[in-house]
Length: 202
Image (cartoon, rainbow, N blue to C red):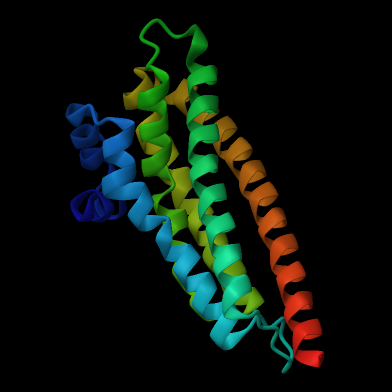
């Protein structure tokens, strides 16, 4: 797992070839990659929201209780895992006209690996200043796009020109899924924050 993370960040071309040769199963991907790395933004968010508190440039910090933080963390974790499956299924749908179309499981494995920069960028949520987390998210999206660009042609067996179009489409849909997921998390976090404020008041 660690080797693939370093390889995707340091030499993605070589690492994509190595990943392709492994023919990894979805269960192996989740056990050795996704379940571990997806915990980074979840645990970081839990620490940030319960210990530090969200700030939006001012002095006031908004915290949630431990109980609400655990519930929010579980919901966040489930949404991340769901997003991997949705993006993988979308890649499988995009490849429907290709002669060597990969199966859905292979597409989910591919989606799990391209999400690696997004998982790592979640580390910044441990100190949840809005602008810092936003910059980290943008950097994660940018490198995810780069991994898509480098990996799509070899993964789908198509030209770089067509791979660029498909990777751009996949990134766009992935960003929409990410925005929807973040919207749900922010909504849940806001509810948890309000609950904590009311509880502390009484």
